[in-house]
Image (cartoon, rainbow, N blue to C red; front, side, top):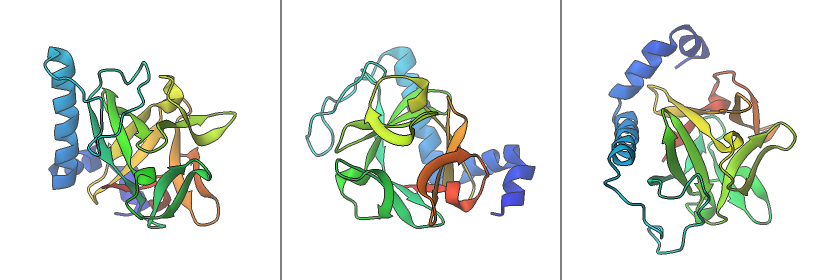
Length: 187
């Protein structure tokens, strides 16, 4: 999909995204989470699939979550949050530093918490894109837009900037440009 197509028909792109199997599963997960939160029928597990305890924050308490890795369409790097190197894009390796629990908030808004560090992806004006202790602030809320090519864009609710992973600048948040550096495969 070209940059022009994304900008010229965002409604059509969203509609087509719902028709792809990956996007349909993701939307299904959103709807399921919304239904569970409305009926209070479901409960969240206190441990992850690997039986390690989850770090909880007030905004994540009792929330349903789904675990994914994020691989950039252009650089083919995965988002990684390790204690030594912080939040950055590196070669995909499938380790817990590259796995994020997606916690449904409302609409298309999610909080992304790293499975290994327990930190949330945060984009504040002063500190930029980084992993910090989950605190429930809008700086840690991300609107996800799915595209028909199987990628998704992550826009911060508070700063209105998008996650971007370019070869020259690395992983950071900048003005949304709807290009491949801001498109991620949710795996």
